[in-house]
Length: 124
Image (tube, rainbow, N blue to C red):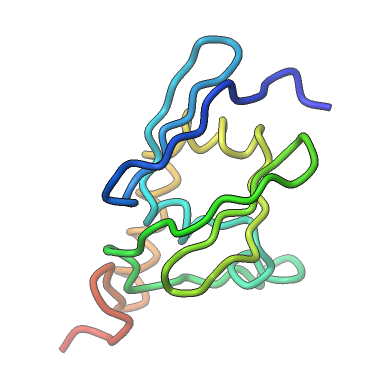
């Protein structure tokens, strides 16, 4: 069991951000796009080493559901119908602390692969 857990999880009215406050007083605002492209699901992370998938075209994705999973995580559903990511409290905390760094690495992967955040098509 994690020593850290949320005291509040709130999706913004535009469904573009998740605001999470933890029992240690820290609070983070996580974008739906970041949550979607860094989802802990096998669809994104793969089933083993070296199988991680770079997911393009999710700039405008929105959160449409949040379902508690035990007392350790939440399953987040997105409007592109992706809903298999189970976000543990520790992973959400990590995204709060390291989100800029992890999202920057994602943006670099997109550039290297000729993909964009705005569309799944390769730029011309």
